[in-house]
Length: 110
Image (tube, rainbow, N blue to C red; front, side):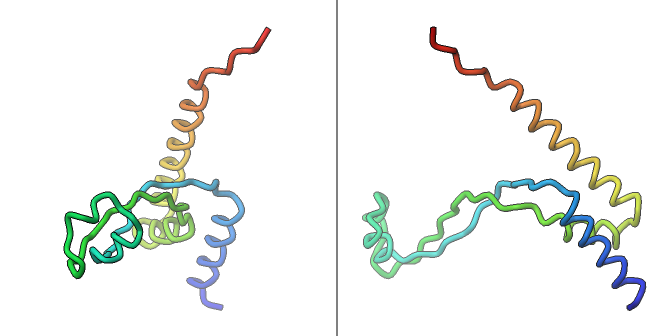
């Protein structure tokens, strides 16, 4: 096994074992025709002709692929880039915990 394959195997094992599940927000583009919009009872469907194509951006959440991010960091900058990636993930996790602490507790019924 080459040195590069060994490194990638270690990165994969590390990412799967130690990195937290993190979601990120993005959008997916869906291309639909006016006929499909009418069949799905979209309120905007009347604006478009039957064969007219419409692009909608739907918000979605996806899991971060830590393996791919760490691998890209490794190829672009080595250990320093990987360390920077870990710091960014830790900073994001700290912001999430801070936001969770601001959520008020429900009032107890007497």
